[in-house]
Length: 101
Length: 489
Image 1 (spheres, chains in turn cyan, purple):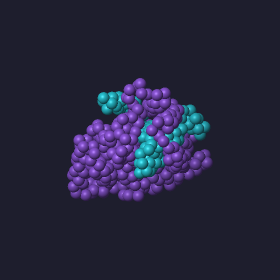
Image 2: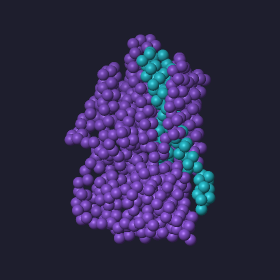
Image 3: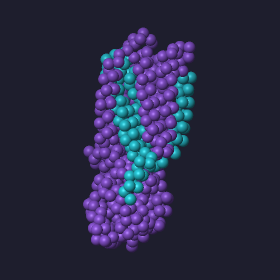
Image 4: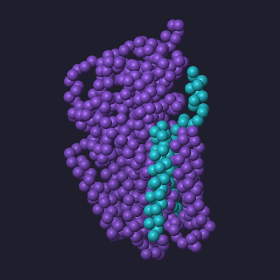
């Protein structure tokens, strides 16, 4: 039953993703990709449990490496997305080009 | 509880303590914020705030996870988080917008390494002798989830590193092909799926699990090698999708809904983008993956023999025309980013505006090395996103009434063969029609062909004038000439 339930979640989330993301304008396709990339760094959650649980030394080492990689993915992903979106933020930008006129 | 490290979901609610409720609550909040964050990307002005909230969601999920009762020691978690943050921060703050595709590929690889390692830990754990005194083992369903996790994960790891190498030009951007390549890849894929089936039927066969990891690592390399640099937007999108599917499979394996949701979102996003990119190149998805474009510019070579000459214009004359133009449309390609000409381009843009002209940019969906790449490059240079026309039909309407179209480092996206020549490999691709403007200036490094290796008849049209040279240098000259004109008054 559990896995059927998980499949429901997966399919419904996929539909939401499909409908929401189809509406993202081409202007923001690069930030979109870095945003989904940052969000999928959620593997961090699994990595944390692997690194902190009592599953033996090898598992702890693998989990530790997984935490490093996933944390890099999350931090870098969200920061770069923010850096890009700051460039597309509202009225500030058009003011600078107005000023140049 | 044999199915996962975080086997919290769908346990009977009676067994759920306040702690577990909090953990699940944090995941639910995170999932909602992720979806709202992506939704905010449909409106540029709200996007930043929305994604900051999504980052907050991630923080919730991490804090919630730290309260998981299965976690015994925190030292490795904390050290790992600190190292990851310390590595990620400078990377994200320093990276150039032109290098964004490499960066994303790199980041995909990292996320995929994490998913793959978690899969391996999970598999080892299920068969660790005497772990927790429970009968070890996996159900077929969980074994399938773990299998997909390491399959997509490992494929994404090496595939992303290959894409990174190509984009960073550590490896040639030209497709690397050999006879029987597709057959080999299909065979390897079949073997990998054979291992997966074996694993589902007999989850205890460790060799099948590790063989699958090895095969997927190899497949990542062999599938990206034959794909050329110009097709990278599709590849990067596809890897985006795979990374998401790996994360979702992790969610299935460890019974965690937030992973399933986040993975499904990314999987869908990557899939949509790769479809859009294939469509913008007018090629089927399969053709991009198995076609090895740039390698075979076979049929197109015929037309080169006619030895037509294209007309050139001096920077002085071009500057004079630009200074008095009412409307100018700039069509940039990846060549502009390579020449780092975006900043001089903005200067020219401002000069023309000062003279009373209107400047717009026509950005093709596949211009650059990843979807939307040139938009961020131009925005970083300080160009207002209101001036960017990202729809091919809109741009063509504006071009129709424009005085001057300036093509900077673009080629295939303005090739009229895509409309006129049924034999051309570009035929059917949606393109800009700069020749409908009064005059076309083409700034081009030399007389070579575009990435597809196809000759471009646009360069021989009556109203096309060539400005040969490095984009940055040519634009610099134009700026100098316009300024000289200004002072001459």
